[in-house]
Picture (cartoon, one colour):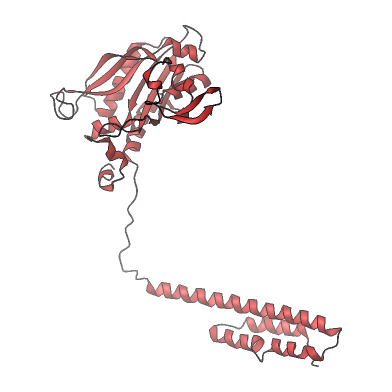
Length: 348
């Protein structure tokens, strides 16, 4: 039997593998060692004449040698293929051809409107506060002075969930029907002075039509401190409307009722399209209703455990879709949610 010097074989192997420069060299190397008449086959063939003591050692060294050679062949093959593919790709690129223009995305018109409104109030000293979309009855109704028999608490007007309220096992959680519950959370977690703006989605089981949707967006505002007055509310909203719609905009406050504010008002602005003369956008009235507001009701302060008669506050709320529709002359709320790029790309 031929005596194999595996150390010498491995040394020769390393030297020869370093000299492989192309696929032809690699194939010659593979045949020399792994071919049917190659070195590894020759070693295996000689095992029959080896002694019982030599067979295990020769067999192990032969297997290790085979695995090492196969690894070298695979590694070199992958390297040559990668190089070949890179050269082909390089050859296929015509650098004189114009590039492919990938259109950039943009913020949705509702996001643009919401960001614009929030930015105005941030400039006026308000901080953005976001509350959860799943709320308790206490935050959504009770703490806002909405009585137990109020129609808005009915299942026809509110999305109730199958999940029980952890703080009141007799009641279920719900999808918030306005952003006002976040005001309650802000007051529960912070002491006055407090000025927050709350943007977010709200949900009501309304039939979808040109002016209604079961999901829409609101922005709520709250300012609480000692001796906050109604005149400050009017001044704040006047500045806001002038910044959003233009300095020449006119405003009017009409008495209204909201359970969580007293006194309460609705705010109209002069139609910025017809300048108050009357057109199809304002329904020939010359005025556009944009938001509701008022002074925070004492019972709301009582619900969040603020000291009695120590603080006053102002609050206001507006629908983002309505603001966007008025500002851009959009007559159907469904356009915001249909994802028609022909519509959306108009608002850059």
